Length: 321
Image (spheres, rainbow, N blue to C red):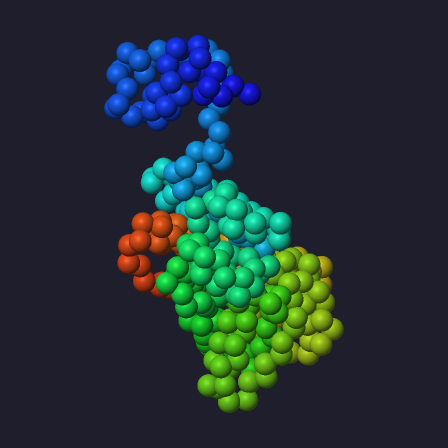
């Protein structure tokens, strides 16, 4: 591999002069800089990113850590992050799995956005104690090097339960996500609290996994237990769509025998019929805010925790237009 020593030798200058030229330092004349850059191109010189990051103490790379890449949820979220970061000259890498956790202590990235249940809160606090800057989307942590940008899960779940109650239902199923996820736990807790505001409402919890298969399994259970119209709050849209898929093979109709509401308003929700009622928010805005807050942390600028506003999309209202 070509090094700056090779360039210096061919150009007949010192290594420091080559370094200045390649980094645009005005200590080198334009003529000398042009000569050095031409030689570097001729030799197919590739800068050593690791060495450069050690010298500058930055990589201009941000890592976003996800539990997995599955489902239709992440596209807009990542686009929001990428666009916000590129405006400031940063790149984004997407990481998953425990092995990728080492990117932080090895300083392969400048900071991280966390939406990954494989990180324990203790692990993140330890990184923050070492000076790493983090934005968390999936938990509440208090530390000067950690910022929170969270969904308003409580408001969303309350809207969903009120919506189903207003349809006249007195039996509501809730299909959960994995028990270790912050969003699922927050939505379930808020749904339980919302139900308590009404009399004579039966609340049934079904364990799910935030994927279509979990929705199909939940629908199978509901069909077996069915005796009168019921309502279902799926704690994300993926499971709601799985429920639609299963019910399409039965004699029960969505919107007549079973009312369903999801959470996330993923793109496909607007195309299924009847249109899926869901809790909506901007994934792109969520991602962009997370990136912007992390850049403020890195610049040692003040930044407040933030919650993402949610709204209800009524499937019946949309279908009637």
